[in-house]
Image (cartoon, rainbow, N blue to C red; front, side):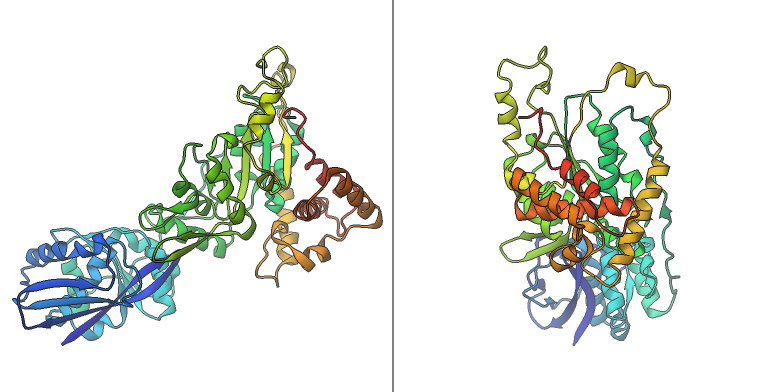
Length: 504
């Protein structure tokens, strides 16, 4: 007899259905798991033996073979424990095999039979819903998986309770969705003194998801400004929140099933490895750029990151997705994020201050910023200098405009873009527009066209730089509630592409 249970294997944020086949045959007693399992899956044998013993269920004195199909798909993670155990229990006629055909299960087994939480319950629930099956998962994952809402999700505390539920002796009540995580009280833009140009650049960046690079001396407020950017951005749509939460679920970051509609904010240290930033490592986990999907990635001290990491960012910034290549698979993660980077103009940071600059100025500035390649710099729509704040500005009793009022303008501009791209599934904001679509939505007036042609010749703009200026000008026009991109909008956008004076 062969019994079949169903579970999932993760391929990026997608969960692919896996058939767990169990068979008992005559022969020397053994428990074999085949179908390209990793170490964690192979070790499931010992956890299942102990869990069966805790339930007073004896393994048969025969050969037990478990096959994970499709056999050529890598199987990684401890969440295979529960479906393997259920398939074996079905072949032993402890649970009805026909009940297993209607559910997808995942969960790690403790030695006493308890179900331990695992990562990826939300993508697993999506896969179960697409296949019109229910889901059985550990109690710590029930609230997370229940957000899908279209399939019954049960989260028993242990293997015994799963058996009682499947046999009908003690059905388990369906889980309910977790709470909506309220964002913490964020620091306000009104705390920022001076830096009017930087504040304006943050508003434009938030409105159109334009990448921003800030260069200035230590203490000028670059990190302070970046930390306030998320507060300017509108909350995520339900589809965006689900997509972001699926990535966080795979990374094991969802607490008590709570899902947030606040854009994520990630700020990795400059010593982070490529696997930490881009993704990879054991199980090809999502990296910081994917965890920042639909939110902000802040990279402070940008030239201090390894050159290999920085150059790897170039393709994800253009395509909005990253492919983690492995020997036996290619894992794809979405990563449409707003990159905000900060840098000192040189290693000591005081290039523009003759009294404090080192003896190598200005060459030290050129060497330091030279760590950033031209193609990477070309991907920043907004490049601004953040000068030091004067004492008179710090002494002002009244700060700048508050986050709430700026966020209203950003929200209005985003609403214009939402209507503009309603029938364009590949674009959500102006930063996504390209080709004929960009030419259509950002066609400048005659004065503006002459202006950008002169700027392109004088600045030696690449095709990418030219198109990024058009995208930025379109966002500035949206903030101005203008249907047409005009010369003032283009002039401001061009101003954010000028070379850095203090790093020259």
